[in-house]
View 1: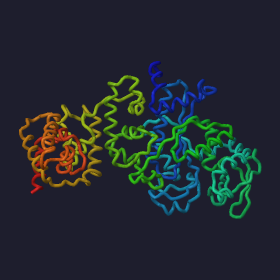
View 2: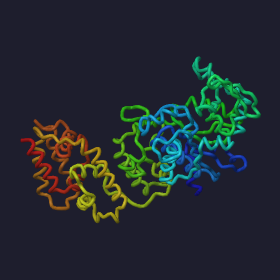
View 3: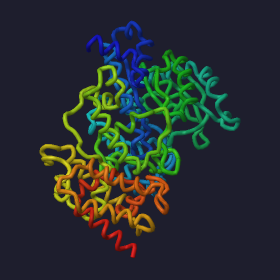
Length: 529
């Protein structure tokens, strides 16, 4: 790591560097015993992972990479699955929901897999998450709550929970309603009768032996909490895990601020320390509701990657994590085009400026070669007017606009065409509705057709754009003309493309071809009567 780059990173306002500097302040002389600085992400496998889950690992990795720029200290990243939690409700987006309902309350790792592919529901969801992470090549260690409890990894801290039981209750009880206070216990024994994670009061019988007593089905039972026979309520569990593993960094959503504060206090009681971390805003669906695994109202990673490249997901996750953002299919095209805009700017930027460019953090400063000669938005406009187009046909049109346009020269464009065809088919074409031009729009389109007819083949997109602009400008302010230029461009989009918004028309006409564009104009004029 060069001294200049490190000095720039120490001053950079890019949020991954701001987060990484928290860890430098935490360990100004390095972590004791040269132990790795430990990053953690948490996941509750009560439903299928969504992009919000994936993005937490992605953002944490960005902070970890930024820390590597600032420090030579070793690091680890643990992706922790809370798969010992009880199944509280049946998700809406899974098969065999009736079967799952029969196992409510049992640890997720002991609930049968409704998909029939793994030994448990948790194992299925864990495998899905790991496939997400492996696809991106994340450097992480997967950890299972069930494995850690059952193997005894947490046993010593669980004994400490019993030793400090009253102190932990003093932290938790003020955060609960009166009726919940009467039955609350930070320790949840697993019923030897039903296998359900019980929400019952417990009595500490012998802290050193890990022994508690509780009532199960009217019978008083004494049982160990060690070796996977119990788990903790999730807030005490969070704090216990921070203390047991020595977690130094874990980000979380705005909805968990109070929970993290409680977890931090419990971690301190158990001899640990609350980790550093970013508090991020939540992803919302198109109705403004919080993304939920059980509702399945977000976008899965598979869905996003059907319509856009991997880098666009990372770009969307990077931007403004402290602001709430909508997460629905409509955000994909802009994410793709903005990613390429920032990537195109990177080479000409000074090293200091590059540290604030999102693509620097997406690729950890190692940008791949390649360029994108057309925008995704323009591709979508092209495929929408082409109708049932093939990839080969799209490449044929690209020859009008891009010199030497071949898949070998532009492999990333070749892959983007597949996504554009899919997105156009599923989300653009079904919404198109061309209207007939009226009033001044008719005369303006007739003039555009006449101007285009006089152009030689190969006229540049910029020259065509100037013609389009001049036509609208000449009509602007005249009696019976457009009220403003925006109305002219809106008329072009609505009458020729069937959409309310669209591309630079010069670029579209150059791409689609002058003759084909004149055919669109002719169809529009014919519809006007």
